[in-house]
Image 1 (tube, helix red, strand yellow):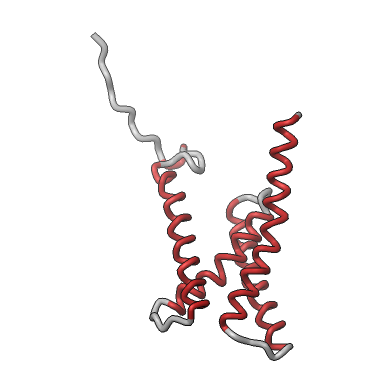
Image 2 (cartoon, rainbow, N blue to C red; image 1 turned 90 degrees about the vertical axis):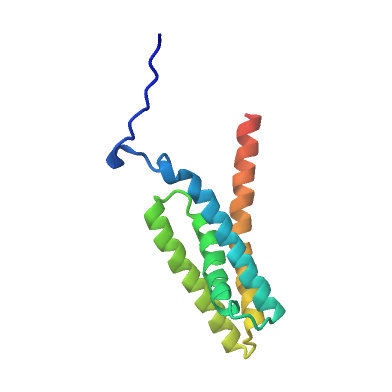
Amino acid sequence: MQTLGIKPPSSEGDERPGQGPGRDLFPLLKGVALAVAAVGAILALSGSDSPLRGPFTLFFLLAAPATAVGAALRGLKPYPRTVVSVAGAIAIDLLVAQGMLAVHRWSVTGGVVAVTVTSTLVLVPVLVRRHLGRAARNRG
């Protein structure tokens, strides 16, 4: 007869990052963040009078450039990458606002579009480089 036992939980110090009990929660949080950012962009671009427009749009204005900068800094450890991504997002937002104010074309809709375009211009080369690297590894 074989005895089946329950494996005791490992101590907190022994867990590797991404191997703990909360590892399934991270993709869910990423999905929720994406949804909140998308709703913020849609509310800002549609001109809605929803009370969620301000906070969700602000979240989008920080999350979109932070995601793009974070993807470009893939080689850094998680904590420094997060700090640099948030600082880069704030810098991108401030540069967009400064540029729009300098040419006297400031608007909320224009700011959201400009931050979206800037974030896309930062993210696309990273994704292309990553795709080409995978294609080269698969061929060789």
